[in-house]
Image 1: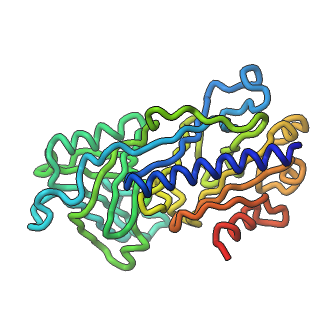
Image 2 (image 1 turned 45 degrees about the vertical axis):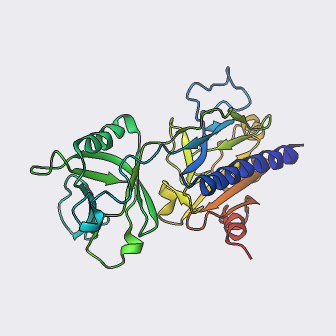
Image 3 (image 1 turned 90 degrees about the vertical axis):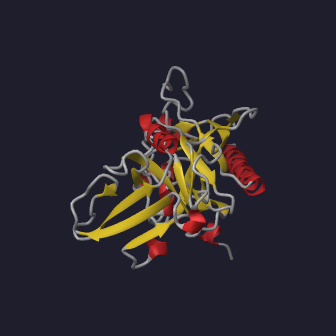
Length: 311
């Protein structure tokens, strides 16, 4: 029965993701699924899934219409809004950059210039309260969350923004130390798709977003958004860095709760005693979605990686 529940749950989640991906391709706008993290969950309110990171609800989401369009009105004359990426080795971090990590690696700067004052203010205000607008770079084929943004120093302070991004287009830029493009778009933070009901996981199942279970980790009390770009690729996620995958663990948590086990994929004994578990894998660059069991022989995501890679 546990296995049947896990299979039903993982089939539901895979279907929701595929529907969102198809909508993104149909509407030519980012569409996705939000896994709802309930910080009020407890053993009293939700005894079968008491941890806030044991997600049992989801909803379809969309990205609002672009508010800095691609291209800007004067892009053909190189007089409109543009984005500069600047890489400097060993430099002291400044606004609009991330630290050199490890030491000696490039510090990355993202500067957006030539905006209207209203556009500048929308970008800055959209990052308040951890909301994350996104920047689309069609020439490079990449999407990036804007983690924070501030007004540029004079004389560009009224029409310019220095932005810190979740990820940078390192791979497409190769060995370049700078890159300027007039072709980009900026979207507001994702929002729930109007008219769509909240979707429920089957009874006694959840998507476990705990650290060392689903990947990438780092989710605390914030909802987890999975968005697809219009080309079907995964968009706006840290999974575009590193391994380039998202792995979502679907499981029936009661068995580990009864045994007092904290699920941890770095602990083989916990995996073996944790009951039936399945992985939904999403490959960032292709948008491929696949399902596989947790591998108990070493890398818990090994079977999922094989499944999402295709034949």
